[in-house]
Amino acid sequence: MASSTNALKVETAPQLIGSSGDSLREAFGKALSGLADQYKDVVVLDADIAGGTGVHHFRKSHPDRFFQFGIAEQNMMSVAGGMAATGLTPFVTTFAVFCLRAVEQARLSIAYSNRNVKIVASHPGLDVGPDGGSAQCLEDIAAFRAIPGMTVISPADPFEMQLATEAVIKHSGPVYMRTGRSPAERILPDTHQFEIGKATMLRDGRDVTIVACGVEVARACDAANTLEQDGISARVLNMATVKPIDRAALQTAALETGCFVTCEDHNIYGGLGSAVAEALAQSAPCPIEFIGVQDRFGESGEPDELADYYGLTGPYIAAAAKRAIARRNQQ
Image (cartoon, rainbow, N blue to C red):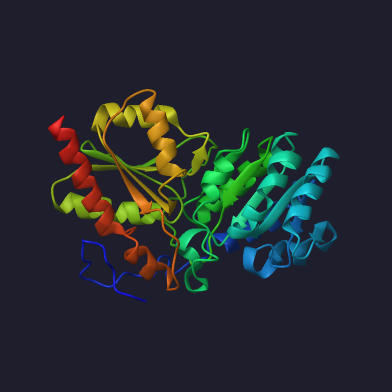
């Protein structure tokens, strides 16, 4: 892959995110299998890729509640809406990029009818890695966030994925949730609690707020550590629920820090950054720097190599924080 064209040069090679630990997809699959006996209305719909989404655990433990649709994602979404109408809680599982094929069915058969269907997508963003730009879905949050009534979730680590899976089961209404392909580092403590619609402050700070979701939360924490060495106090918010976004947490952070950086493994348009900007524009406008893929398609490479190439790693987040602070100070 060509060398990075970003202005900021990283002196040390990036570490593979989560070099130890389950991937988010495996954490999801294990959690769903473990919860199935408690929630007997849960069924799983698969598009011939259970090994890639983590639901092979559910297929093994509860084969009578596992439905194979083959490569027919639109049909799978529509059937899920019908199943939900009978009182079941269907989990529709496939790769994020294949969910885009079925946005129309998710809109009409699920969201329009307010069916209690959970769409869980693995392989989002640059985390897909070597599969390249055609498989790297950088638009899914934007697409599903725009559907009325659709809740959108992107957990940060395997433990939060476990908690979010049960929260999604308990939640009434359609949900889109991202998982992930790469091994994911455990960053949240045993005391962590997940609530749909609520951000978690992982680190307090007074100079800038970094808002992140998914795999970018670990990188945001790395950036905060770097900034601390430079005498900058950074607040880190884990915004695992992109929709409905925690407006109260954002407004408080705006009043107390006055500037933001948003971080996501997604196009900068329509995702977490857009959601944060929309919320703040209505309550407490302030400078925001956006870390994400800058309206480009991806390329083939290892996930963390790509994250560095596209400017999503800690050093770039730290540099964006300094820009946001400078803009605030110029006002």
